[in-house]
Image (cartoon, rainbow, N blue to C red):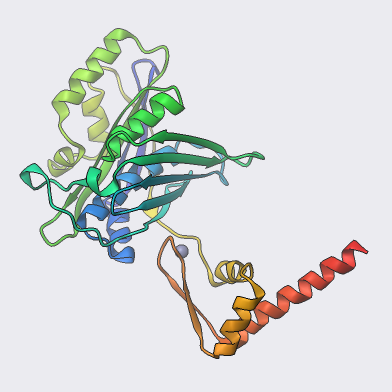
Amino acid sequence: MSDYIVRASAANETLRAFAIRSTDMTAEMRERHKTLPVVTAAMGRLMSAAAMMGSMMKGDEDRLTVTVKGDGPIGQMIVTVDSHGNVKGFPANPYVDIPRKYKGKLDVGSAVGRGTLTVSMDLGLKEPYNGSVELQTGELGDDFAYYFTVSEQTPAAVGLGVMIDTDSSVKHAGGFIIQLMPSASEETIEKLEASLKEAGSVTAMMEKGMTPEDILNKLLGGLNPVILERIPARFHCNCSKERVAAALATIQTSELQDMINEGKDIEVKCHFCNTAYHFSVSEIRDILFAREHQSEHKTEGKQ
Ligand code: ZN
């Protein structure tokens, strides 16, 4: 089985539900950024939530970025997704190692700390949509639930989980989001609360072999769940040497000139996927030349 997102509705469309298997994308993130277990867990939870939120968007070009800026040792985490299940992201500090909690549980809350969770949506409109809330616990599931309630005025139950194996690899990663529409009845809410209590954690359900569909059917049992769509999901970065060169072209002339004077090849890494791109002195010279040429054109255009 590979990663995917499931979209569903229940209780006569008064509940909207999403579930994800994100084991492979979390494993790939770990491989690319060499994260230690508590960071793998934090990033896996964040990527799971962001990927499900991405599947709520409609447009092909729509993008959603979630930034978690905490005062814990991980620092900032950024994850960007599209509406097709493509997810990329990175933590500021991949190498956090802090004591575990009771029963050996990873202390994601302390590694993230207190700060803000910001969701920025680029839906092709002039201004991107931005919503921001204070982190409640840094465990992320609670923080996203709070975000939906406060920032989008749609109360939601959010479960996010990553199980790390004894060799630090990713055994399971996944999550669910269940949103209550304003028309949800008291009875529906009570039933949902009871099954949330009974179901246990996402990773416990995955450990039993449950798929995202199984997880939603379990959580929405007795509420007539209808599975609407299944969307493949993966870690995918759209960077290229051309894009990195375009970013290089925005740095100061004096800095580019310094690189040329040093006479050595340079390596530039993509933040999101850690892929290294190499530029020779003559390529940097070309970037500088192209820019100077371009600015000449601009000046001519103004006259
Ligand atoms: Zn990249």
